[in-house]
Image (cartoon, rainbow, N blue to C red; front, side, top):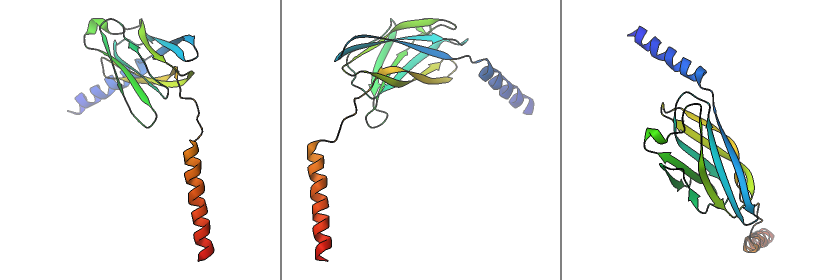
Length: 162
């Protein structure tokens, strides 16, 4: 039993050492207010990749997928959008030591740092950073200033009367 466990542990460590990496190249086209972010996944591992996602803080419009891939979106946290592409059949994987393009999304927002994640056929995850749409820094709405000023004034009045 212990030999089986050690063999499994050794195979896991070997797979981790042999795991090269994944690079996601981004091409940005368009003009302010109408950008297209196009991604190419470069698989530098010996295992096919069947899932690719990008997490952005900017607006996400139309999403395009390579042949055999489907896209979906989610909200992993406040102000974030997860765009995930998945294929359901091995022939459509990003091949080992190969690349695949055709992943794209439209956005009204300009570029910044976005995180990406991939999942391969061995269920190994590789995370990194690429370029994607980011929400512009905005100041609080005037109503927020009015509310905060009102609360401060009420607090001052209460302290004066006590």
